[in-house]
Amino acid sequence: MQIYLVWAVVLASSCSVAFQAGNSQDSVGHQAGAPITFKANNTSPLRAIVQIARDNRLPMGIILGSAPVLCKERPTTEINAPDAKTALEQAVTDTGYKVSTEDGVFVVIAPDIGGHESSLLHFRFDRFAGTNVTIGEAGAHLSGYIKTVAEGDSGFATDWLVGASAETFTLRLESATTQEIANRIALLGQKGLWVFRPTEEHPKNGRREDPIVAFGYRDDAAALDRFDCRRFLEGPQ
Image (cartoon, rainbow, N blue to C red; front, side):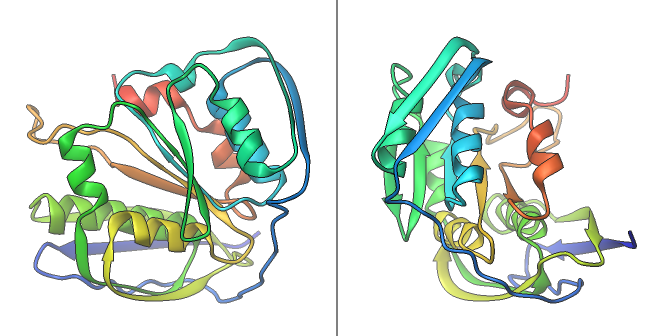
């Protein structure tokens, strides 16, 4: 398979990005109102949420709290639900997390969102634009926007591998918050999910970690399987 390397730098004074990739725009409907069953041993609530969302093409957002309660494995997880929202609510039973629907996206919300995280999620960008961008790539650039425009870093760089047959899109949003942009990304094409985590407002080492990542169900299945909840929360050791 042919692979292209995409690289971009954005300065804090800018609020638009040029993306490079192929183009395609298929759409797959999700069965949010259909019954859902799920059963697994030794899996975490997060893995159950991801599996349910991916199997049913549910546009999804996950806002993690500082405590890694969604990362803890359970001996047995069994879900029998009449619809997607109920299935997700069963997946987060006894975690304190809540499930809401926003802009057509299911969002799992931590009980301990801090003021810094809340301000980033509600930060409003004048403009967010992308041409021929994948879901994962769009998430990486949204993370860069947050670090530069919202948090004041001088710039950011990303490396992103894009397959020749990758599903890509064009985005044009004005006066949109971080969460509104992330939700729009999750609704693209064959759908996907985004995950937001707490980050330090003033990191001691001067290195600001990515606050958000996104995965497309079509093109990022392998990366989604490798996603490590605890490592994402704790950062590089």
